[in-house]
Image (cartoon, rainbow, N blue to C red; front, side, top):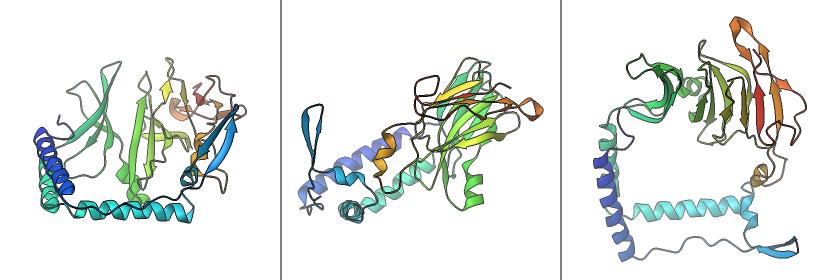
Length: 276
C-alpha cells in the first residue's frame, strides 16, 4: 500500500514553500480587498454583542459574492507572481503520479473485513473497496465515477461507516465539489443502495448500534428561502426510522414516527432502525 503523498514529494513541496515565502516577502504584494463593516448589535443573556461581519454569512448576497471573488482573484494573482511556480507544480504532479495507487481511511472490522478508499494510479476519485483479510479479493462497493457519468457532474465519497455484522455500509457522497453530502445505505451482498437517500448529512458522525440494525446520524434542517446558509447549522433535525424485511432477506430502512426536532431516541441526530 502506498501513502497518499510520497515522502520525496513532501520534501520537495516543503522546500518550494520556503522559497515561495522568501519571494513573496521580498516583493511588494498589493493589499487584498477590504470587507466593509456592517455592525449587527444584539443582546444575549444580558450581554451586548457587536458583530461587524455577520452579513458575510449570507453567501447568496451579491456584495458578499463580489468580496469572495475579489479574495480569490487576489490569491490567484499572488500565487502567479511566485517565480518557478509552474515548473514546481509540474514536478510535484510527476512525483505524485509516480507513487502508484493511493489508499486511505482504512477500517478493520470483525471477521477480518477490511474497508478502505482507493484511488488507482491515473484516476481522479477514490472508490470504496473492501476485502476479507489482507490477501482476500478486492471488491469495489461504490464507485463515484459511475454516478458522474450518469449525471455529468463529478461525485466524491465524503465518509463511510460499515455495520458491525458486515451486511451494510452507510456512506456519504456529494456532487460538484460541494461537500453537501447525502447519506446512503448500501447492501453489501447485492451491491445496491437500499432505502431512501438522507440529504444534508454532512458530517461523518454516523454510528451503528451493536445489533447492526440501527444507526444514528445528524442531519441539517431544511433551509428556509432567503435565510443565510449558516442558519442550516442552527438546529439539526431528530427523528426515528424503523424498517422491516425486504426482498431476499435485505432490511428496508423506512420512516417511523414523527420527524420532529428532539424526537429521536438518541436525543440528537437521526436514529434508523432496520427490523429485517
